[in-house]
Image (cartoon, one colour):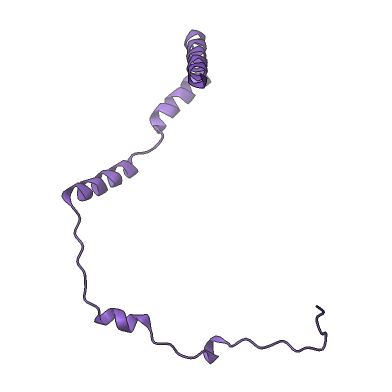
Length: 98
């Protein structure tokens, strides 16, 4: 199939040239209204969600105090706890792989 270089493009109808269609809003305004009510549990859940959204993910005061302790050299790291935590996580992975 070859494209004819002398062919003229077919003009697409513009927005103004489109035939008018009945609007959906006209039908929607004549339809009866439906009332929806939420159960008390749904209302309570919505309130809990908004309260949880207000809680910050990071405790900035704790982060700042740890930063200050590190900067001043007062922050101590218990390498025994870190090593034990690593060993425990490896043991869990090995048992989960079986």
